[in-house]
Image 1 (cartoon, rainbow, N blue to C red):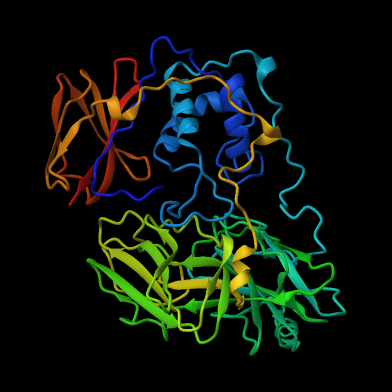
Image 2: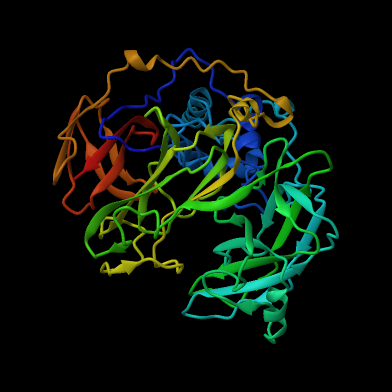
Length: 523
């Protein structure tokens, strides 16, 4: 979801009467199959499949509202701050096309015009990995405590190699909170495993092995990571692959069998990379410690001066439930600011390691900065404590963290010529293209409601509404917070029972179609 600024704007949804209504077959199937079905399919992360008209039709209003609010497809980083590789974003035309289709009754159209649905033969992105290994089956014991379990995955790798592609395939996303992947050349992890009668062994914090090297992570929303051309993470000869899986408190007795897929360099010179939490919540924090009293909103900062020229290839912010925003940037020796990433509406469920479109070269003396804001009040719907409690640094879901992982290597100025991804928009399924002209009215010519005050206290006034109808107030998660009957072109919303935050007001006509949309902020 995009950051909800204090400015208010309207997204008009009415379609000109003379414009033909888009159809599923000619227009919408292409968009849904390309941008939604990879998750919304049998076995995918989506809560319902979208691989056909009959599956999509019952969810048509949800599809329209989620895309209008930019909740779906999920892409937390602000693309206006920095455009990153492999962005999951819809164009405005695609968003408008979906809205016009739903508001026009969501017709199927001629089925012969629809592209064939995508087929998914595997949950793996790396379809033919050089190494694929799965942990032994583990039944997560029901517990009120967090369970950090390490599993040794012996691999047949007799020579030093480099990892160029990395994928974690969680065996059970309902109980797997996160996965950290390490290499161990000491055999210590295997010894710890042998000393525990259950599958794997218990270890909080790390894997309990000095010198183990982090090679990757998986958190909710993460996708496989691929190194830029000519670079790779080291995989030493005869090393064990060790994963630490976090099963959060409250997990049920379910089976997990998480798998790791590795793509290796096939030959030639490979520059060694590392994956480290360069900005973290202890040594590099400038205003710590990371302690959050109840009923407090607070922002923390960290910074690190780069001691040698480096090239960074990816960044992965990580925090927990109280976090509301994470941002990182670099200040170059000439005092120019280089934006790295901004996640203005932090969502614990959607995290990842984000690659840059081209590697970024940082000269010696560059200062990396990180910022993270936390809301430990009742206004935060993700607050795990009611009433709010003291929260400190820790790895439990109900603790907090502030990490910025960086993929990095020794830097050369010419690294910025390496291309990772330059596509403006992700490729469509079978190269399909929606072709119905929507003909939406130009936004600049559409008068929208005026909202005041911004932000509001107990009451907000809307004037310039499109006419009689029903006004609904939804929070950032799409939940209905209030509904009012509107008779004229002005209305006041009672916000006394609404928590502080950002909301969307939807005006529906007598047929239930959204005709106006406006964002509202409560102080």
